[in-house]
Length: 352
Ligand SMILES: C[S@@+](CC[C@H](N)C(=O)[O-])C[C@H]1O[C@@H](n2cnc3c(N)ncnc32)[C@H](O)[C@@H]1O
Image (tube, rainbow, N blue to C red):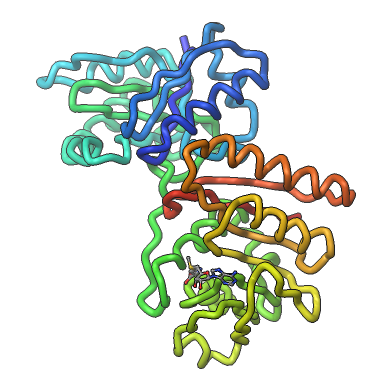
């Protein structure tokens, strides 16, 4: 019944998400094929095994790179009657386990946006009907699966589930972050989203604590530095370009005009962050040096992907990082994710 795994992704990255889905299926010994159309913002992994999506969802979701959300789903509900979409949706959902919450979603594309007035309208009556049919708990329950109702169009819907505590907690897999007025650049949201993605909120006070130190490579004009300073962290901002004046006035930032690839800290720091636009191989070699030399305890950095073979580039970068850590006998966790605020790039976290 749940033979399909629906994956949401950034529009334009369907091939990468498809390649990733096939690799994940193969890794757990499942065979199947992917249906992915360019720029639709989602792909569908079809597995030959009965309920094949479920063993995949027992693996950690945080190890996926290009998927923003995963949904083990039922066959497509097509040609829904425009006079009553709710009844066939509820009838389908009755086949699924009891869910603790529901997310009513669309692809993150212009077509998806055009369905959002419908999803807004249908949301309250659909939830009420799902509760009445016993498909949803009356009170939100985060220990039960999340139900996803994914409107591809006004008449085509995929319904399915994602497991409690092993999925993206955000609707459409997109955190809603507001650009802080004082931040020097929009890039600030990338680091904030990275923290929300990689560091569980209860650990923020410990992992992003005042009095910590950080090096920000490619820091100008200072969006990432601004996030660190906001947490009370002292920052060495390495860039030949100018830093925003406000941020320098905090007294927590030292601007170092130097090349980020050859810069060495005088003392080890807690965090290395890096947003330099350069070849992934050059960035991973530099970060590996920082970790193996013990110059930082944790790192968040971006890998830019202007090339054609983006999936292969990310796989190679991850392998190179794991290799370097293994050779140095270091046991860190690595997570890589294409964040919502990332464009042609992915963000890497390596930490305890
Ligand atoms: C995408 S911007 C960084 C934006 C920054 N993270 C923010 O939030 O405002 C990239 C920066 O990397 C700097 N850069 C490029 N090559 C560099 C290098 N080899 N060393 C240090 N900085 C470099 C550029 O001057 C530019 O300011």
